[in-house]
Image (cartoon, rainbow, N blue to C red; front, side):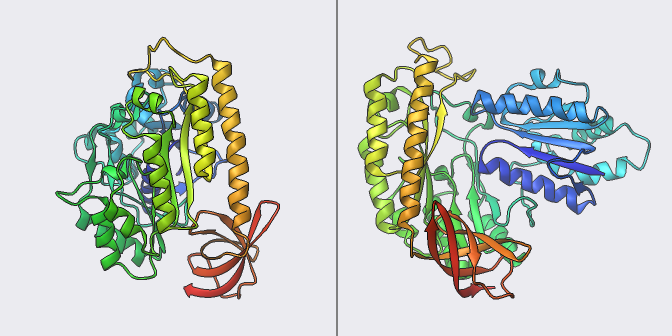
Length: 441
């Protein structure tokens, strides 16, 4: 029997999808490719933007069209918020809330037993999931192998205590909670024993990680103390107002990858206050300066929302000029869309859509310029590269500072999973890594 996963949204969703895929594979199910029909479709949704929600609905209708007898499981943040709307798409749709989502990890085992009898697939899935309710934890996502990524994803945190006026995720995911530090260490060791050289720590807001008096920086110290020198750690999104002197010091370790993502949203102090963000442009400048102090070649990406209610031309220009001044490497730009249940849902001082979209285009153009400049500055750099793929003898991988590269000049024995040192060359924004030496096989 085949299962196909379609994931929208953040690295946390990707992490959870990997764990679900791992559970199905271990019970003998076959993962269908993105262009293949399947018996079971799982859509892991996002509710950050209305476009993400539209994609989820569109994929559900598409799957029902191509296989009217298939079962469609819809889960994730959007499913948490709009159960009835999604359920109405088809009687073959099963909506799984975030509370019940971990039950998808045990579904394959229970389902394989139920299908011995002559059950309708949708009925069998519903019965199996109902029997699993209230028995699972949001930290049960503990994949030992990854079907869609060459790096390991480890969920260390869930939920969010922030009340950002534009964000629906905190409503869907609930309060912040964290996986115990010792459990993070043990899961990391398991991933390393499975052959992974890089672990991506994920969560809704990993900056809010807490285990007693341990914060994110203390967790990193624990991991760095006990994990092998060959292991690399990559951090997902970090909040600009939650850096500490100790966190900067920990980041000096070469095993922490020089790649950071900050949800800035705006650089107008007026707008930041309006949407309940707890930092200023001055704070952001200090964070960027400190990150470049500890990681001089850092790739620094940021989320930005254009057209937030109350954003006047002056506010946008502050954001535009600020992003240009501090030289953010790459921008993920989101035109504002009001989200049900948030403080800005019924805001009256909205920005006309055409202005919102014009501002988004200007920022995307800026992002392309700044990304190209960063790429060109990497000419001749000596970097670490994690080998990800080998296709017809051609190796490709990802650098510590998050550049996708083609690898040339490597010996035949180098294979995916190896960590190598290489010299970068840049030609028309295409980055090539020339093999220098093997660091870890």
